[in-house]
Each structure stands twice: as structure tokens, then as C-alpha cells.
Image (cartoon, rainbow, N blue to C red; front, side, top):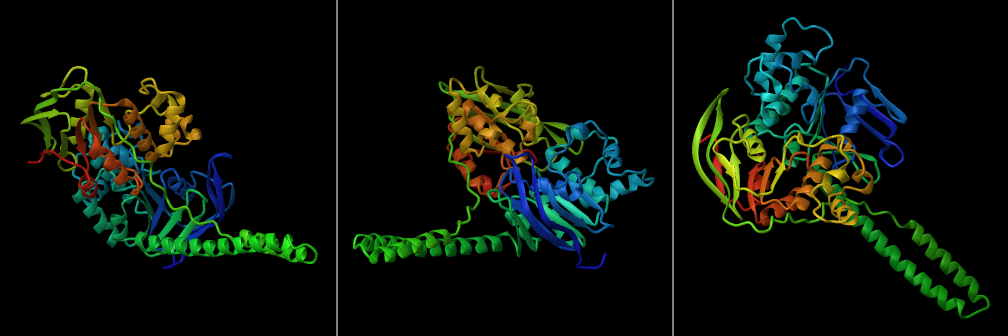
Amino acid sequence: MAKGNAVIRFKEVSFDFGQKKPILHEADFSVREGSKITLMGQNGAGKSTIFQLITGELAPNSGAIHKDPHLTIATARQVMPRNQLDLTVLAFFEKCFSETVYNIDVKIDQILEVVNLSCSHDRIIKSFSGGQQARLLLASALIQDPDLLLLDEPTNNLDKEGIDHLTKFLIAYPKTCIVISHDANFLNAFTEGVLYLDVFTHIVEQHTGNYFDLLEVISARIEQENRKNAQLAKKIIENKEKANYFANKGGKMRLVAKRMRQAAEEAESSKVEVRREDKTIRPFRIPCQEGLSGEIALITSLTVMKGRKPAEKKVSLSLRKNTHLLLQGPNGIGKSTLLESLARGTAKGAQISPGVNVGYYTQDFSTLNIQEKVFDFLAKVAQGKSEEDVRSLAAGFFITNELLYSEIGNLSEGQKGLVSFARLVLQKPGLLILDEPTNHMNFRHVPVIAKALNAYEGAMILVSHVPEFVDQIRIDEVLDLER
């Protein structure tokens, strides 16, 4: 391929999942060889769908997608497919190729070094932490050495070291890359252009520069459109007032009144629709379980991973109402394992007081039944709320009536997260356990989520690798598993 040639070109591409689920409307954009592009948009707008159109997993309803005939493509997905969790590392990487690769063990070691992960090839995928699985997903795309690398939320679950390592790699990466991410600071470190999918118009806008540059363009456009509409509104009022005045004069003045009305109608039709920028979810509150007093949870020991060997660590933590605990440590040390065992009541050296209602937010949504309807998932904990109450709450999290009666498996990862938060509101937990709650989230929602967690009055255990998010929340205790 000649340097700078377009490797992907969308020509008037439209796509929908049925009449009520439009995704793209006559999308026109191109991606040039060697460029690093950000693909951004609201949760559920259809960013991952664009990746599937690029790879050929989906076909457009109309228009055409032109690809360089020799182009090779590999995708690093958001989450590990459930049907691959029981594979060994070797089998996982073998599935990346349609033909047998005879020196694959050497290739695996080389690519694992690139993503800063060391492990044996017979280790089972589900034994890795969420952050380690994120590195494996990235490695599974890199090992194919594609011409076009598609990264879908690659920083999810990664600790700071992992994000820094990935950023440096992408800065030096010589081939074409398109990245979906809600982490603006990460994106702005290496991308040179933005494809912005508008969730309202379903149009893809192509911009040069990074996302902060795009925000300036959008803000300037909104200001200009509002100014133009204000001028037209003033003109409309003036013409209508003149039309009424001349109409009452009678005779030839009625013709003047008619012209005034026509001028008002023309001004009305000249109004432009002001861009509806991404909205944030409605402010919400997670109520605390009533009647709680005294100790909610006690942790006297826990297990951490030193390499691949578990080691018991003595601690003394008593969680009561209004106690917010931050759990820290690098990927693979055992944070998610601890949270899961606490939520299930199987943690050694940890005890939750009887009768405490536990709200558990998982980073990979593995506890969700993907075949269950969203409404049924929420109604189970609605505690006497009416269907209208549930629908109103869901609407605040951008869960429309159509989505409310869809299966959870049909939602985007970001929408699954919003549904999980809606459930926590209905559940009224006494102990809130949160494992990377900003994964997949539009960055506009993060301050709203932080405010809700900051105000939560029960006991809370939080794992997050996003310091900007943690800084917005009151933290009373910090437990660093590495130290």
C-alpha cells in the first residue's frame, strides 16, 4: 500500500438494526494509511457497530464500504468472549489465525512482552484479572500484525502502568489504528483525527486534531447557530407585528400584511437545528438500606497474588455506615477476586453482617443474565415501585422504553453499566461493592456517577484505576494490596 492512501472509505453508508434502531445515515469518511484515529460518540450510538462494518461482520443497508484489497484487519475487543474463558493462553492465541502457525510459542512470548504481561501458555484465561485479560485482548490483535488495528475501549481495567505502556506503544506504532475510548486524555496523547458519531442524527463527522479540538469546533458552531436563530426570531416577531398592523388597515394594506407574513414564514424556515451535544445522565442518588447500625463488614485477612502464588495478608478493617474504602493495587494482584468473594459471601477472613443488602457492580458484567429483559432485571429489586416508576428511573440513565424491553445481551457495554447503576438505585444496598464502575462510560457521565457515590451513606468498597474519578469521591480508608 502506498503511504497516505485511503485504506477504508465509507461512501453514503446507512445501517440500522430495524426501523427503531438507526445507527448510520449516509456516512461519508475515509481513513488513510498510517493514521491514528479516534472514534467517539455517546454510549449506544453504534461505535462498535462501525467496527463490525469495517471487518465485514455486518453489511450496510445502503451505500458502499471500500477497502484496500490487501488490507489485513485485527480487532481488540472490549471484553473477553465468555466462550473463550476456559481456553488456555496457547489455544486463545491459536484462534487468532485461520492456519497453523508453527512458531506460535515464540510469537506469543514476544507479543506478551509488548503488552507487559508474563505468563505460562497453559494458564486458563478466566484465571487472569480483568486488567490482565485486557492485555491479552490487545495482544491477540497485535500478534496478527495487521495493517489496520481496531481497539475497542483498550484502557478498560488497565492500571496506570498498563495505560502508560499502551500509550507509548501506540505513539510508536507505524500502522493504521482506530480507537474507541471514552478516556479523552489517553486519546489525545496519540490520535490525530476524530470520527464523531452523533447519536441523534446518526451522521459521522470527520475532524482533524484531537477531541479537545473537536469540542472547540462544536462549541463555536453551537454559539453561531444560536446567534443566527436569535436574529431570525427577532425578525419573525417584527414581521408578524407589522402583518397584524397592516391587516387591520384594510384595502391595499392587506397585501403588505400578506408579504409580512410570508417574510415571517421564510425566516421561520431558515432557522437551523442547533446541534444537540452529548447529554449527561440525570443526577441520581443510591439510597442506603434502612435500619443499619454498627458494623456492616469486617475484614481481618485477605489473599493477594505474588506472581502466581497466593499469599495471605493480615488486615484489620471495620466498615460501618458512611465508610468509603478504596482498594488499590496493580493488575493481577487479586482486587476483583476479593470483591467477588465478598459479594458472594465466600471470602476467607471477611464477614458481612447478617441482613445487609449487598449491591455489586462487576467490571465485566459477568453476573448479568444476557437473555433477561432489562425491565425484568430492574423489577426484581424494585421494592414496590410501579412500572411507571421503573421506566422513569431508567429514562434518567438513557434507557428508553425500547431498550427497557430488550434483552440485556443486546445492549452496548456502556448501556449495561447504566442499567447496573439503575438497579443499585432500586436495590438500596447497605454495602456497595464497585469494580471499575467507569469502564465503558461516556466521560460526560463520570462526574454524575462520582457525585452519587460521594453522597452514598452506606459502606462502600471501590476499585478504580481512574484517579480523576477517585479524586471526586470522599475516601475514608485506603487499602493497598501491594504494600
